[in-house]
Length: 103
Image (cartoon, rainbow, N blue to C red; front, side, top):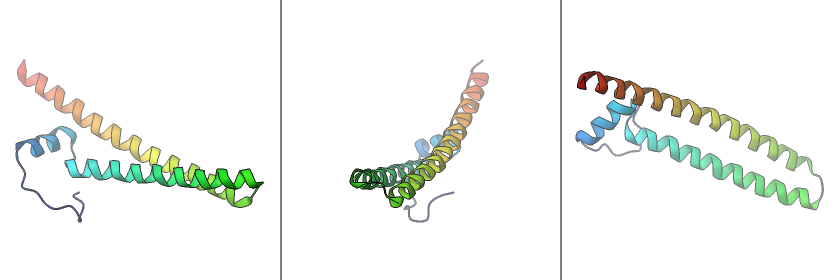
């Protein structure tokens, strides 16, 4: 799945090789990392505000923000874990095939 907002660049051998090895287009891998990076910034912002509110005294808003941060963290941790597993599986398969061909 290619992101709609990414310019289509003619494939050269290196892009095709990355796709073959990882099972995903390089721009899709980058898009996943950008999404995870954004999620971490959101979590940081939530925790920063919650921490400031807690210093002023207990607030239910701080508890809600911490709950939201926990949810976002777990959701994106699971997403990143699945992505890493998929990329690793494709890489192992590619290495195994390359090793068989060289024997």
